[in-house]
Length: 132
Image (cartoon, rainbow, N blue to C red; front, side, top):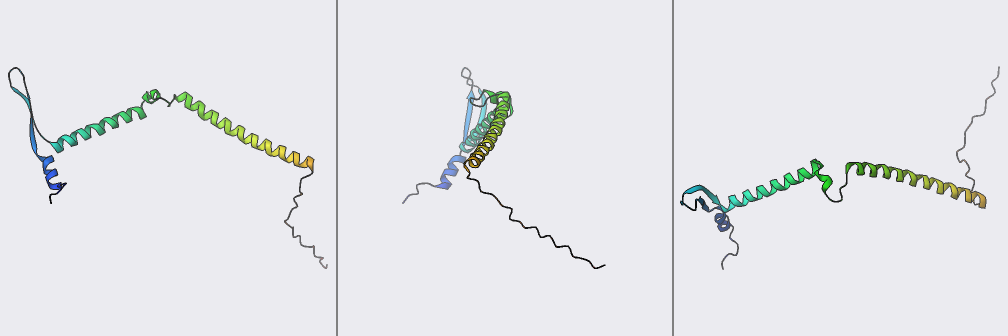
């Protein structure tokens, strides 16, 4: 039974050397000659792709070009959003305080309050009479 995937043959197939010759069409003079293998071409193309992606991401992250990305906004918009968020949080907290206050007032007017007694007892020692 033949092997479906031969790792040694595939690796050897990727390492086979080829020659790429660039010639002048009019004079048939060799301008440039390259000795390549499929593996070296694959590695070179992958390296170029990763480098281009890295440069593109760096340009978008570290330069003002990021403001042209849809949905990102400007720096002043970001500052305004942070300010508005803090104001909304503060107003929400004030609304909770007001609701609690109104609930307590309603409970007092309806007579639904329970007196909270102080449960801690003070242990005050009795003064001892000293005999003089």
